[in-house]
Image (cartoon, rainbow, N blue to C red; front, top):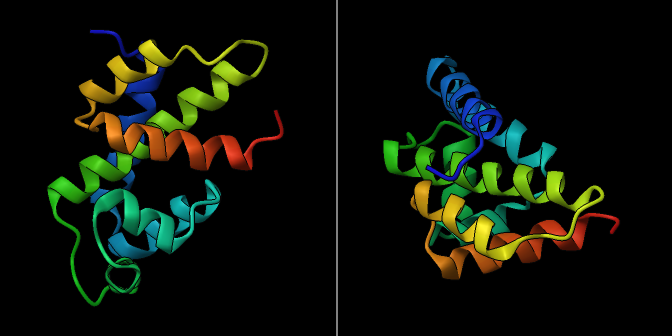
Length: 122
């Protein structure tokens, strides 16, 4: 397993917060906004339309386990990228292995990195 323990705990905490929240959608929205990801960007990462993300966040439709896993994986990759950008070069092969453990395809990893690096002041 390549994922550092701190990142596994990070992902578990987020997943737990979403699942245990009485309003899953608003919790997802809060995390999305905290990471500076737009509904459109999240929709592209999840292969959903922006409108579907809005409906999930507003509680019109429920998120399923696959959505939550991919969402948490996206945030975990974002967090790992931020951590490695602070004083370290981004080690793409390492991030690829972490993404694989979270079930994130390499094509989506490229998109996640593009979004995260665009928003970081590196």
